[in-house]
Amino acid sequence: MMGHTHALSGAAAWFAAVPLIGMAGMPLRLPDIAAGAIISAGAALLPDLDHPSATIAQTYGVLTEALSRVVNAVSGGHRHATHSLFFVVLAAGVTEGMAQLSPVAVQVFVALLIGIGLRGLGIGVPRRRLGSAVLNAMVNAGLLGGFALLHVEYRWIGIAVGLGCLVHLVGDCITTEGCPLLWPWMLNFTVPVVPSTGGRVERWLVTPLLLVAMAVLAYRAVLPQGTAAAAWLSQVTG
Image 1 (cartoon, rainbow, N blue to C red):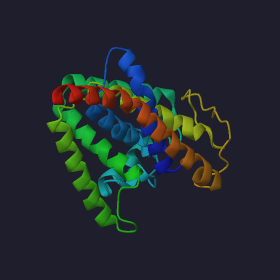
Image 2 (cartoon, helix red, strand yellow):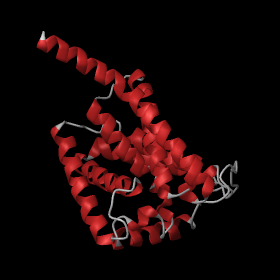
Image 3 (cartoon, helix red, strand yellow):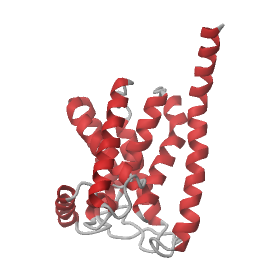
C-alpha cells in the first residue's frame, strides 16, 4: 500500500475506535479526537520504517533515511519484523511506557508522528521537498501549540500507535505480498484483494472508500461532542 493509503486507514481506524474507547472508560474530548486521528495516521506508517524509499523514510530527510536503513538491517529487510503482530504490541507497549515515564519524550514522539501523519496525508508542496518540509514544520508547530493550549494529555497514545500499526498490517495483507504476522515465522498472510501497490484498485477503489469511511466515522465520533456543545451553548444563551 502507498503511504497516503496507510495514513488514511490509520485516521479512519482511530475515528472508528473513539466510541469504543469511551465505552471502556476513557471518554475523549474533541481535541483528543483530532490529535488521535493525526497521530494514528502517522503511526500507520511506522511499519514502513524498514523501507528506505517509503514515505516515512523521506519525512525528515537524512535523519529518517538513516534510521530507516538501520531498521531495515536490524529487522531483516522490508516486510519482516516490523510487519508483524509482535511489532504492533512492541510499538504500543513502548509508547505507553514512555507516556508513563516521560512527558517530554511523549511530546517529542507526538511531534514526530504528527509530521509523519501530515506527510502521509499529503500535506506539502508538490515536487518541492524543501517547501514541503517548511510547510510540514509550520503546520506541525501550530497543531502542537493548539493541542497544548487545549490540554491534550495523550493518555490514549498507546492505543493510537498500536491501532495505526495494526491497520498498516491489514492494508499490506490485502496485497499479493502479504505480511509475516507471526514473525519470526516467515509465513506471509495474504488475501490478495489489491493486485499491485499504487495500482488502479488502490487509487480508484481503496483510497476513495477510505475517504468516505473516514468522513462517516469522523462524523459519528464527533457527533456526541457536538450535541453536548450545542446543549451547553443553549443553556448559556438561555
